[in-house]
Image 1 (spheres, one colour):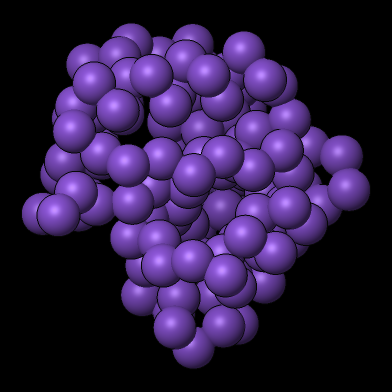
Image 2 (cartoon, one colour):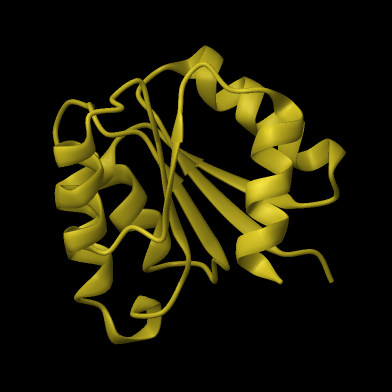
Length: 121
């Protein structure tokens, strides 16, 4: 059974590209358009990993990560922040919120798949 990865990004084209890349690598993908949408969908389906953007309307990535980490069933789920932000203080804030890793946009498909495989195995 393939691992299920949720991608959360307010950009439909980014979600599409991430989803395509992950499906090509053999993963199942659930998409969410913002943090609120992601939380709602997480409560209704099993997910093995979360990849989220930082800057989104309604609920940003930091708030999403904190909310997900507060749910006992997702306390140890890998969470990757995928964002244009690369400042060390932003990365530190992400780690403090509970992010497992950080990928800076733009990224290559190979880079994304390598990080996902490393974190999930």
